[in-house]
Image (cartoon, rainbow, N blue to C red; front, side):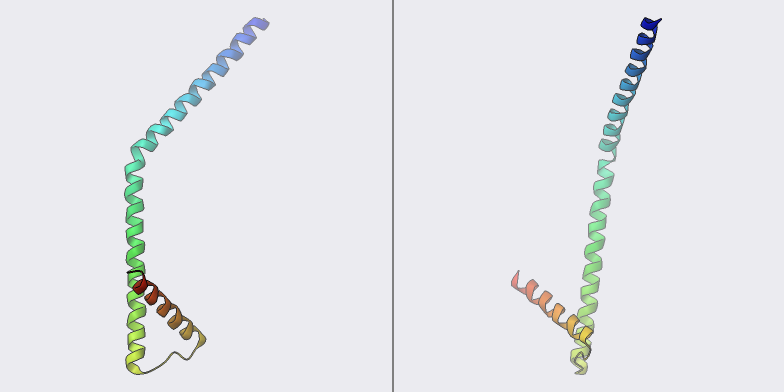
Length: 97
């Protein structure tokens, strides 16, 4: 009786082991199959982020040019902060070229 119980336990553990091995290989296979899609999505996300940053920068430059043409200097502390940060970014970009 004890021998049959031992055989049953070994059979159960073997089945679980085989299931886990199958699970590992199926996950590896799915990751290999889906890797190109993931890379494409990451590239698209980076492209979208760059376009958004460029759009924001252009908007900021347009507002700064409008303020310069109108002769209006930023009077609020927030406006001054934006002007200082914009100047720092422009200088960094010009220095790094």
